[in-house]
Length: 286
Image 1 (cartoon, rainbow, N blue to C red):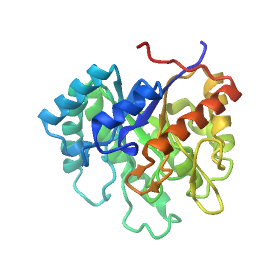
Image 2: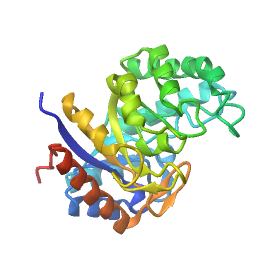
Image 3: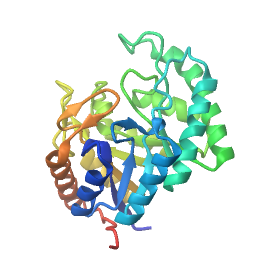
Image 4: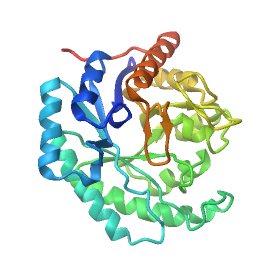
């Protein structure tokens, strides 16, 4: 199967206002919106009327929602899982309204985040909670994407693999973030990580970072081996999203910002790298 990549972008990296987000996506010929925040609100805080407004505006613009960038799993392992299950159900209702069956999640904060040297001891507890989320997703007809993230149990290649293997559910797949691996000192992450995680990858968040400082860069300008990741995806016939999350102006822990200029540069840089690697982009039919 010939690989075909579609571009998406985190709208709140562009602007707070949805109309500004969609206008730039149209200008950049990006046909998908990764919905994490809009109008200054996290997606989890949207009410039904607001979710309907998102759905209507996207239809008018000819842009589809690729996935929900939910905050589920960015909570303490010691918190009640019932609260996260309730949050996930709320996200599913929003996802239904905006027309996607894909939801990003995380693997929970351990009690001590000052160092990740003891995170292995929390893999079992994290996997148990992720399994509960995946069971709910399966019953509701959704797919969850586990994103690697610093200060979360699933931060390194080995722990991400351990979590996915332990849960062992088709309703829990992997969202590969090259920059986040770099920021936990994973050198040569694609070279080392693809044999362990490649079979789980269903989504990619596109940003890069530099090993010696952790500073975020556009795709191919850091140490995340983004070009090699694209080549590996190409070789297995990947049919999925490359979701731009550049963090070029602000690289916060829960979100980031790039602005119009930063998102434009990130899209141009990614497309150049895709062309260099020989990746076919599926452009929107407007």
